[in-house]
Image 1 (cartoon, rainbow, N blue to C red):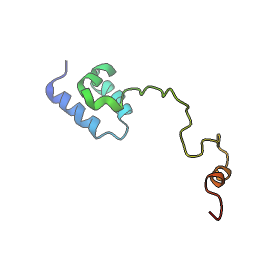
Image 2 (cartoon, rainbow, N blue to C red):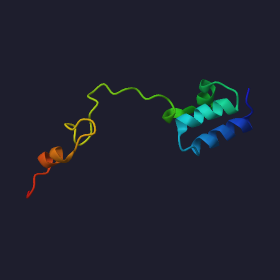
Image 3 (cartoon, rainbow, N blue to C red):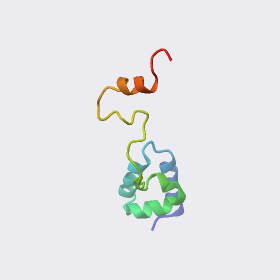
Image 4 (cartoon, one colour):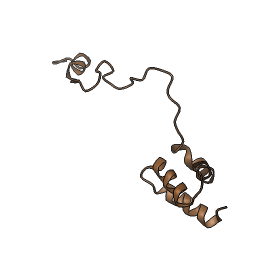
Length: 85
């Protein structure tokens, strides 16, 4: 069982973390508790550390949806923004 001071330190460490998901893992190892216990301590703060559900719509939502992989985006952009117009 963690003290209130330790719980407060966990919350502060999480708030200051650059990578919240990785911080949960680090905190669970540091305090020798499960990931779920850290998430319970964090409460609503931990929303960004919980896995996000996959969207049900199409995966492509960027500007150049027709451009696949590492291809050149120029042709798609020319169709969107024609020259001289």
